[in-house]
Length: 121
Image 1: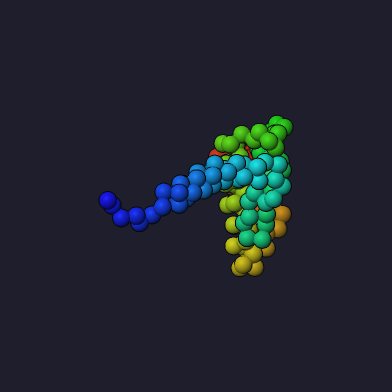
Image 2 (image 1 turned 90 degrees about the vertical axis):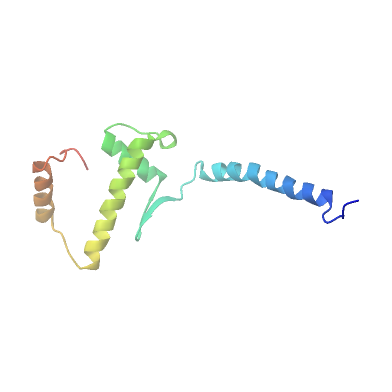
C-alpha cells in the first residue's frame, strides 16, 4: 500500500481552479478592452486614446475609419510615427529647444526633397 501524501480531492480543486482562471481571464481582458476609452498610448506626459488613434489613422489614410475596426497595419504605422514624434518633442523640450514655424517649414521642405511623401503628416 502506498502512502497517502496528497488527497485526490485537493488535486481536483487545484486543477479546476486553474482551468477556471484560464477560461475567464481572456474573456475578462476582452470585455475590458472593448469600448474602452482609456489611453491607448502614453509617451512622456502625452496620451492618446482609441478615438485619437482612429483619427490619426483616418488622417494618414485619407478616409473615414471606424474606431472598432481600425486596420492593424495602418494603426501600427501611425502609432510608430506618433511615438517617435512625441519622443523627439520630449527630448527637444528637455534641452529647451524651441522650434518656430519657419524652422518647421524648412525641415519639412528638406524631408520632401529627400524623398518623404509630402502628404505624410
